[in-house]
Image 1 (cartoon, rainbow, N blue to C red):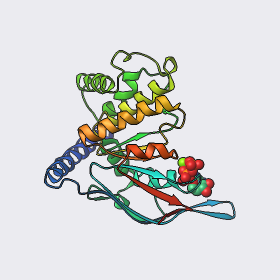
Image 2: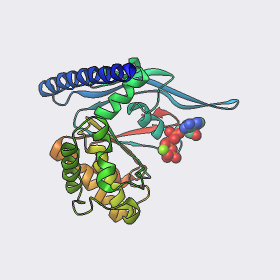
Image 3: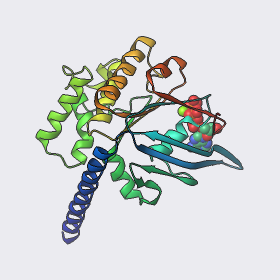
Image 4: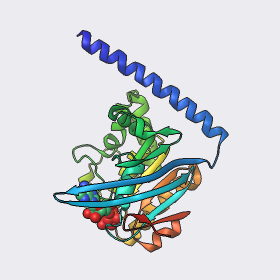
Length: 257
Ligand SMILES: Nc1ncnc2c1ncn2[C@@H]1O[C@H](COP(=O)(O)OP(=O)(O)OP(=O)(O)O)[C@@H](O)[C@H]1O
Ligand SMILES: [Mg+2]
């Protein structure tokens, strides 16, 4: 009982601290437009496979500006997903660091990293990663519930963002009753519902035909141009690059010059 209350108090304190950080970031972002929002410095990531060391990233440095739409491209196995996972702090590099909007994420303890992701970052995956037993709206507002928003707030936010991705009439629908393109749009709505400072997407169109891929890319472009959403997207399709501002090319775990 006492522990629970202490945990609750600790959660409240952490939420307050997160709100303060959010306010600070808002103030800073008003001052500096087009500043560096992700600073990846000399990132090394090595995987051990039994006796073999796989050097997935061999010292990669990248800067991404606020409001940029960037593609990460390169052959299969060149380290695209590994780089996205470092920049999106889903994984920890062996050395080097990633600074996001002024926060050096390498110094954050795991729990703080989780909070940072929940409040500040959004992710879209190739396989949608929706929870099958939840409706479109429930999938979208789950993270808002976890952030402690009220029912009225998260329900209206979910309806609003699902409408923005063209699914305003599908709020109660289960993912299994939707096409691949619709499921990916639900996952985009989920990633954007909490207005993340950066949207990360790993081959979001890999399972979609070219017509549906175009719809998804148009949607990314819309959020990028209309709302200044920063987007980092892995893709291996050359024609996708035309939607982006810039391409970061990888080869054998290094930037291609
Ligand atoms: N968890 C892991 N354990 C061991 N090796 C890994 C792991 N993740 C990635 N690798 C290896 O690191 C290298 C880079 O992998 P990564 O998944 O980043 O490539 P990719 O460019 O995303 O490829 P693809 O286009 O096929 O998705 C590959 O050699 C891969 O086998
Ligand atoms: Mg990959």
